[in-house]
Length: 176
Image (cartoon, rainbow, N blue to C red; front, side):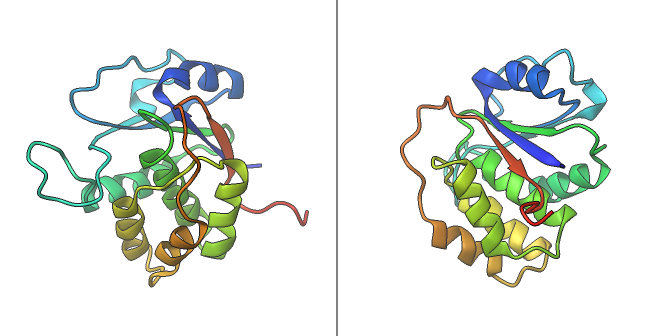
């Protein structure tokens, strides 16, 4: 089964080793330093510097933009799916779940957006995908508002302490 691991920064090494991940997307503010786990090669790590905000015009903060989301889609297309893809941000609640949704839809565009959003909510009661990343991804993947609507329908996640990594299957494999 092809899966995406979503993790807070504090648990990336553990998740990479436990699940044998070899590729990683980091969505971090520019000033947030961290170490890439040794099991992830530098050429299989995508670092996207952005803040967890949903709109532009917030001073020195970097809003997610089309080039960030396009990079997520392109990296997912090159992902060697024999091992999980690890996606993380600071808390593992907003930017990384949004990126995981975009990656999953880019790899399996035939799936229904609502089914994917419900699957996200099932595996993570805490996820509150970043609205800006979702909106940009919806447009780039030509979802015609379906992903935006699906994420709005599942609503805000429960309060989180940044210690709740989860595994999101790219496709619904419950029927075989």
